[in-house]
Image 1 (tube, one colour):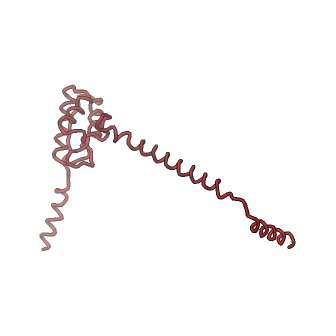
Image 2 (cartoon, rainbow, N blue to C red):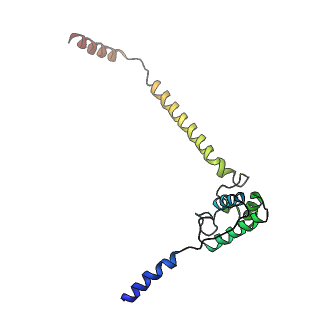
Image 3 (cartoon, helix red, strand yellow):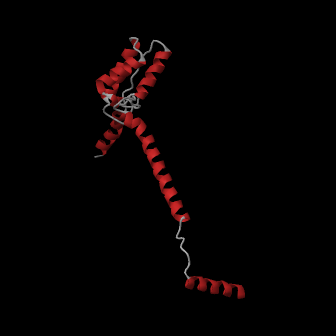
Amino acid sequence: MKHLLLSLLLLWPLSVTAAIDAYEFSDPVTEARFQELTAELRCPKCQNNNIADSNSPIASDLRREVYLMLEAGATDQEVVNFMVDRYGEFVLYRPRVNEMTWLLWYGPFGLLAVGLVVVLLVSRNRRRRQSAGPQRELDARERERLNKLLQQDKDT
């Protein structure tokens, strides 16, 4: 038992190390573009990580593909278009504005506008009801009682 525990403790650090991709870039500008693109593209497997941070095999393949395309002279837009053609709009953290994503981009602003209109209408109706309270004339008996109360207040 003691030997098993000791061997597990010795082998554990080897199992948690991640593979680090080492690419040699032709210039610093290409390296900066690589860093930016891999930070903007989402890993299809992990779904919450970009391909720069993911340790999944597909993210490693995508990083290699981005590297090869950049070194071959592809523009950032060509790399993004390649990834979108291959994996769909999901690989973009910031989806493009088109007829499919219009609601995603502008829907929250529409809901906010509708909410503001509802709040304004409700508050305006509430103010009207408070200011237009019941305004009926007092009959003779109520007027006499009011006068008595006012007279008692003056006497004290």
